[in-house]
Image (tube, rainbow, N blue to C red; front, side):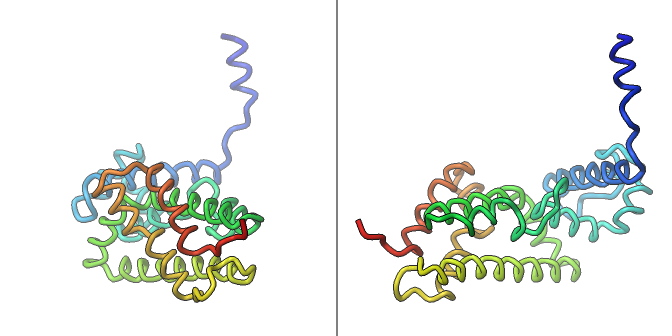
Length: 219
């Protein structure tokens, strides 16, 4: 017991910045659960504070309003909390654009995006409902969709530059196919409405995209 005490005592105390980051993560996790469970309107800031184990004043101090908190939860679901980087800087995206084999590139891209869709799936109807009430959420959704279009388009242009797209397939059409099959609506339709697992969806979408987008290679 004494050894454990000395070990614990030798650990440096968390800095103020680290404590603030940990509190923010707890609030975001609690808010995600509350919004998914109860919806935007029924979720209250006191209920989020109780889940997070903090004072409600702390929640307001960090996020100011329920609308701002939902937007932060949405951002965290896309880019993560502990290592918040835009998707184009994430390891999975770099693996996709650096893969020598086009099927491997698509598989890496699909796996990375599907991980985001898995986090965003339960939140999608919450955001859609909130957008009808809060202009800030509607603007946020429009902005995030524009970022998705740009990111998917950049990946398709990468395939096009390397002459990997099917002959006659334009960048726009290829981007539209990718946006649709690897999009939140399709993911939710399969995993929530049709009962597919995340892995079932991923095993279907990656080869399907390959058949639709990638040029045939000589046998």
